[in-house]
Length: 93
Image (cartoon, rainbow, N blue to C red; front, side):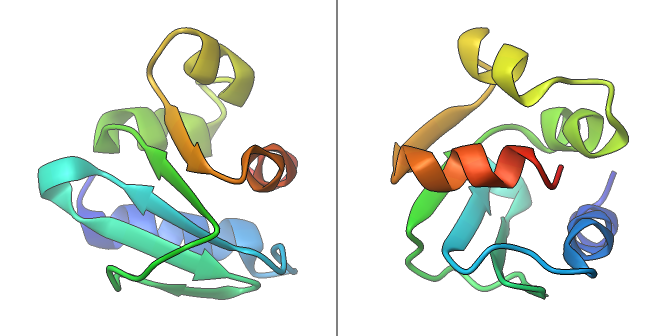
C-alpha cells in the first residue's frame, strides 16, 4: 500500500472520532502519518505517542489481519512516548 492509501485507511478509522492525544505512525522511508482527533495528515510533527512500524504491518493492522497486542509483543511495532495513548488507539484500529 502507498502512503496515500494508508493515510486514507487511518482517516476512515478515525472519521467517527479519534482520540484527543496526538499519534504519529513512523513508517520509516515510506513516511509518517500524524493524527489527532479525526484530523489526519502526513506531517512530521511531534506527537504524544510515536508508533514505529513498517507500511506493510500498518496495512495489516488496519485490515484486521494483525492484532495490535500481537504486533507489539512480536516486535513488529515499537512505541515511544505515552503508552496509554497507544492503548487507546488499539480500540480504534
